[in-house]
Length: 267
Length: 169
Image (tube, rainbow over all chains, first blue to last red; front, side, top):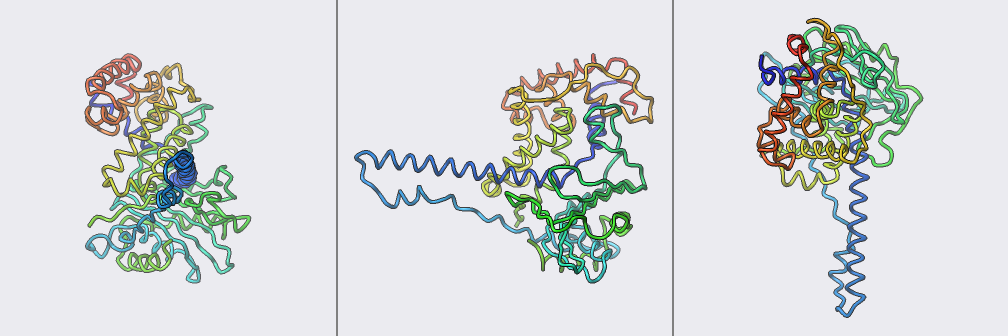
């Protein structure tokens, strides 16, 4: 048997078994990226200032326009907002469309009490493959908490290495059809829950609820704690994670509702 | 007109794959997380420029390249705390018992030098061409071919008789 022919399959299977904390990685990367950008800008500004000092310290004539340009902080380019993911992305088939990040919000709204207030939404989706979103929920106590949801079509099997290796500690075997719950690990985050639910059809729902507002793009403080514990009970959120409503194809009405909510509250 | 991706959307949708690549290259869950965070952080710091210059495919290629170079650079600087498993399990579990699959695979990959491992992962997990891998690694296509051939031969030796059993899983 040719090793090349099997290596792709083997590597793919090995990779699919990884349990990956996507939201944590994105949050940490954003914090580090901001720090890096700020350092770069300071270095650039210092370099420019030094150059100006060198030039003006000699016999060269002083040109105020040049000086002003050199001293000016780098202009921040606002990243364009991504609004086109909010609504249905394709013609409905049997009354259903592909789930986007906003679609997930529509599903979550159906699962939470009607009085729930949603703020600060962001989300995205890969048609019929995965969707993810982050939103703050307020159950009327004015203590908003971030909820993140990720829905994936494809996982193979969560298999962990045995023994005492870091990989074994970091990995969790999650049986199909059983809800897995864990407290959110480390990283100086306030107490939070994370739920993983793997279904028999091969899809998986990952839901995390924080005891504060998660803002990955905020440089110094990616999370602002608003309470000691996440709102509601773990059982409540477990039931939400296990809901059959989470699907990569959702009714048009749900998608539309999610899109309307998302467009009103997007960050 | 194609809409521009914002950073968080890009990162959220690519992290899973980048992590898989990083994990198979470095063999360590925590180091893989750090590598992906490093690569994405570097992209974040220049995101407006990247957005202007690159389409989605370009952004993906850029992410792979940054990830790869971060990995190779970490290895060169000897900062890695990776624990390479010296021995493969004596008896991989029979078919249907996938619990050792990842361990066996990472242990086998762990015995390859970093650049060889990167070539194997990029070629056989990511399905990149020799030329694309050469471009990402900043080396010639001939050098990639050579690394690839040597890596496969080494994997054959490492896996030995276990290979047939492993590939049946």
